[in-house]
Amino acid sequence: MKIRDLLQQRSKENFSLHDQYLNSQMVKVLKTIGFDRHYVKAQGAYLYDENGNRYLDLLSGFGVFALGRNHPEIVGALKDVLTEDLPNLVQLDVSLLAGLLAEKLVALTPESLDRVFFANSGTETIEAAIKFSRFATRKSKIIFCRGCYHGLSLGSLSATGDDHYKKGFGPMVPDFVEIPFNDLAALERALSQGDVAAFITEPVQGHGVWIPDENYLPEAARLTQKYGALFIADEIQTGLGRTGKWWAVEHWGVEPDILCMAKALSGGFVPVGALVCKEWIFSRVFNRMDRAVVHGSTFGKNNLAMAAGLATLEVLESENLIEHAARTGKMIVDALRPLVGEHECFTEIRGLGMMIALQFTEPSSLSLKLSWKMLEAANKGLFSQMITVPLFQKHRILSQVAGHGMNIVKFIPPLILTEDDVRWITVAISDVIADAHRGPAAVWDLGKTLATQAVRMKAGI
Image (cartoon, rainbow, N blue to C red; front, side, top):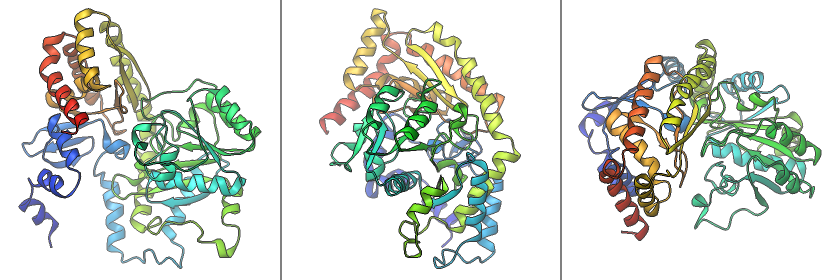
């Protein structure tokens, strides 16, 4: 079977196949908001449809494509693995490529972290972090933050602070305690009982791009140590240069006990996750020969994933992408900040590196307030689609709403954006926000479509 021939023969069946065999609701969503394109090529920060139209991808596969799509260095590394006839997943063996990637990650993560566990995804690394914390401390409680997102498998879902993802899947795993993000008093109250295994947090909350106060993470690390708990940093989205440093915790000089990563480590090709932790934690879990396989992942150390990880780290360093992300992200924020004062719905822009949020709130003028309330009555957070949809349809920029029920638009683009891309973004955002502020006539056609569909979805129609 030739994949190239198969793709050519059935090139326009993707939506019908998904509608029949996969998630038909996702197909409905894409068609409703006009995102139903037939992409035929991807290169760097761009997607191309069947008509040759180029799209700027500010979603980057939820942060997977930090290096852009189809980076030649990653492609070359994977070809090397495929053509060398290497032994793979022998299981009763130890992989050289896994050892090399672990060595590199230990060198790049905070100094106190020196053991690595490989998995297939971010949620698997969170599951491992929960298990390792409980075993190492002999305690059970896990503290997590409201609004956080750590994954959708049952353990990571239990640590996710958004009921939208939990509804109907309960009961959750016992002994998970939710506290507000960026609230040290609440954290200390939860820790003070002395029965907490770990506190887990994203250094910057992905759903909303909420950046903590300057002293929050350093004090959180101090408090966990004081009360005998572990500090888990979920860097699945924020790590590997996304915020303009290798790890977001570096902005605050924090060294966690456990650090989780995934997404960008894949180079955009092979799913991979990694947990890096302190020696004593790892040694307590794997403390005897008969416990050597007490926790594992069948495909976690496969050669393709390990090669993709090694190549990704090499590209991040050789192309100075982390420094580039810091500069370019600041350029985007600085270019868009003046719009905050010009438009009443657009109230804040914030970000670190290539993790940026545009926040919108209810306007005060009567005509805009009525339009806003119409959309919010249909579905909370619907106004933000008045930004993302025309960004895509009019300006060919792919972006996302920052979280369920939020009027926040989020950019997590590839780290490789150019100055031309920044201009593209600035012109497009200026135009779309201006259009959204022109009153009922400007929002009615699109708003009516989105609102009607939202009402139908609520009614189960």
